[in-house]
Amino acid sequence: MNKLQTNIEKVNYKKRLLKLCVEMIEQRIAAAAIAIENAQSAANAEEKSSAGDKYETSRAMSHLEKDMYSRQLLANQQELEALLNVDCDKLYDNIKIGSIIFCKDLAFFIAAGLGKINFEGIELYLVSPLAPIAKQVFNKKAGAVFTFKKMELVITATF
Image (cartoon, rainbow, N blue to C red; front, side, top):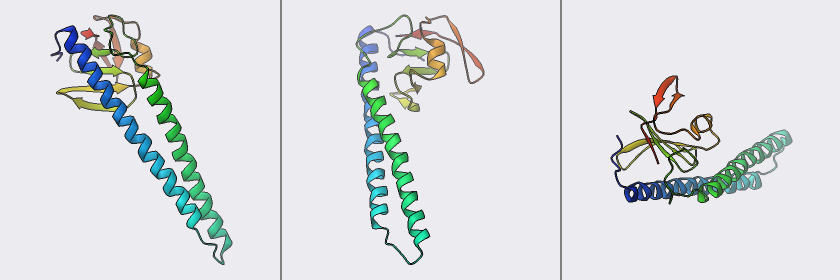
């Protein structure tokens, strides 16, 4: 599974993967900003009808929607800030933030919680450093065992 052999290949892979993660979060930030703007526009566009309750309910829903997107925007901005501090110039024997972990059939990148992707032919899970699985594997080395989705996995390599 791990076709990255040299340290230079590993560092460059991590840098490209980190760049993709940054782009994904930037897209989420842009989408949340647009959604906030749309919710605000919807609230502003509501015309007071003779049925005042309908007007108030609709405005309240638009404000709730705007608040939800504002929280998402803030969370994504915080995740981006944390992601920009990940150092991909280093290779780690002990798993830390910025580590890539290989197991028999799975791989993980501890940097941001963005889900499962296929990146340059390698399927991996993009995991937040705050996720339970990240906390479970921190400071472990190749050969260590951990549990993921009720499966026991052996770390075959990490960098």
